[in-house]
Structure formats: structure tokens, C-alpha cells
Image (tube, rainbow, N blue to C red; front, side, top):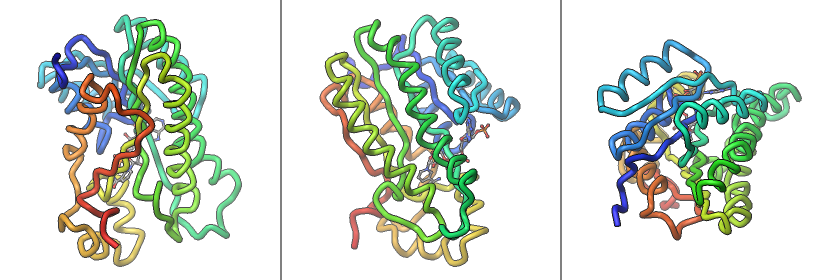
Length: 254
Ligand code: NDP
């Protein structure tokens, strides 16, 4: 059995045009999968497609605003039409609004929840019939250390990421009968555009992360490539409903 061979598989990575998403897309592509980069920014997405093509992967950009349910449905339908199947869905698109909880407007709260949580659910719902018809599939949703811990500046983000773990367990329970495995990955602190903003906005964050992470460094997007291959392929066929930290030990140490 080829545990880590994804040849012939088709993967959608939401927000796959940079950061963690592109790191995971790179892993999936190197294992042989065709990749759909689903995000908003066309230039960034086409650059990611070109990067994946250099690895020899078949890849395409399909526009997505994950906060818009209809956009999620159209993106999945386009994927199935253009690639003929959908085997792996990576729910990675995400954002944060950093401010004290008492100052969130309801609109800001919904913007974070709609992007990070509701968008993931709608993509899963859209992918489900395709995976069911094919006899199985793999869903990987990106949580966070804030699926476990809270933060004074990230009430909406941590609520969305905590909920991703519970959503993962429920979908895993519901769709195990269809041979669809649903898991969450909880990255530690990874050097991306998102966290570069956080480092600017949150005083002392960089030093706190370095001191607190047993591995003694920030992660890189390619640190997430291996878990994507594991959870995207048959090596993980009996793993479902799990939330796996990839965090250099951040969540292990008191
Ligand atoms: P980036 O900001 O680099 O990537 C976020 C991606 O999401 C972008 O590619 C962006 O593309 C896409 N995106 C944002 N909003 C939308 C939207 N409405 N519709 C479609 N795509 C969208 O951040 P990271 O790589 O760091 O983050 C990726 C995921 O990992 C997020 O879910 C984040 O919460 C999570 N995470 C990150 C950690 C870190 O330390 N970096 C730690 C833990 C979790 P575009 O703008 O083109 O739409």
C-alpha cells in the first residue's frame, strides 16, 4: 500500500496562495496531488500556481471568498467540473481582528466567525456529496493554539478556532460511514503574513513565542507540509476527529 502517495488525488486548499496554506499545498503537490488554490487575491494565487507547477504539479486558481457561502459552493462545483473529482479539502483560509473583547462590533465578530468557521462548514458541506460518491475523502481544517488557549486580543479568533475542533469531531462522527476522515491541525506560531502583523500589533509577542516554544524558533509554512501528506493520504485512514498540534512543543509545556 502506498501510504503517502497522492498521485491521482485532487486537493483544494482554501487560502492556499501563501503562508501555511501554500506550505501544505506544497507537501500535497510533492506527494503527487493536483492542487486547487482557492482564495481572493488573483495575483498571489497565480504566483502560487506557478510555484506548484515548478514542482511538476497540476494546479489551478479558482476564486473564493470563503465568507460567502455561494462562493464556497461555486468553487467546489468548479473544482469537480475541471478536475473530475475532489479527494482532499484543506480548510485553511482564516483571519483575525485583534482588539479587546469589549470593543468588538457585532459585524467584526461575524466577519471573523464567517471566515474561519462558517466558511469551513460550507466548504465541507459542498465537498461532501463528491467525496461520498467517490467512496471516501479527507478533510483537514486548520485550528490554532487558540483552539486550546485564549488571548486577550483575540476573542473572536479563539472562539472560531475552538469551534473548528468541535466541528471536526462532529463531521468525523457523521461521515465516518462514508469513509471520509475529518481532522484538525493546530499550528503553533508560524512565520507568515498573519503573524508578521501580530508581531507588529502585539508588544513583546516575538520574545514570548521564542521563550515559550520548546523548539526555540518560529515554525515555517513548510513545517506543515508533512502533516498535510499524512492526513491527506491512506496513512491516516483510521485517524478521524483528531486535533493534532504542529507547534514545536508549544502546547506540551506548562
Ligand atoms: P496568511 O494571512 O498568510 O494566509 C491566510 C490566507 O487566507 C490567505 O492566503 C488569504 O488569501 C486567505 N483568506 C483570508 N480571508 C479569506 C477569504 N475571505 N476567502 C478566501 N480566502 C481568504 O496566514 P497564515 O498562513 O498564517 O494562516 C493560515 C491559517 O492558519 C489561518 O486559518 C490561520 O488562522 C491559521 N493559523 C496560523 C498560525 C500562524 O502562526 N501563522 C497559527 C495557527 C493557525 P486571500 O487574501 O487571497 O483571500
